[in-house]
Length: 115
Image (cartoon, rainbow, N blue to C red; front, top):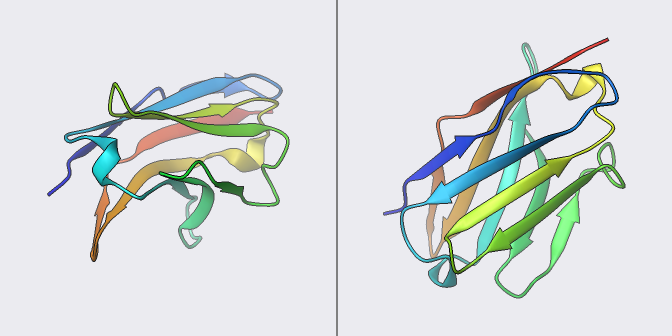
């Protein structure tokens, strides 16, 4: 079982930055895959960025060059640094972890980007 708690969302103007944080309830060494997803009103949840225990990362095309995912295994934390934010980045952002056959989700944090 893994509990995930997101923080760092808020309201920001277009062009601004936010850093989201996800705290995991157990060591990240036992979690192969961690990702950030987002869901805007009326849209499906989509992958934003992901990282594996081996250090691989991947990003949605819409955020490449603007967002950076990182993990701190010692602190059981995963971060999403979001720069040059756009109104279309407005969504609820969810932290996701995959450990073995199980998948876990946080409760989400709202990010609102005003134009």
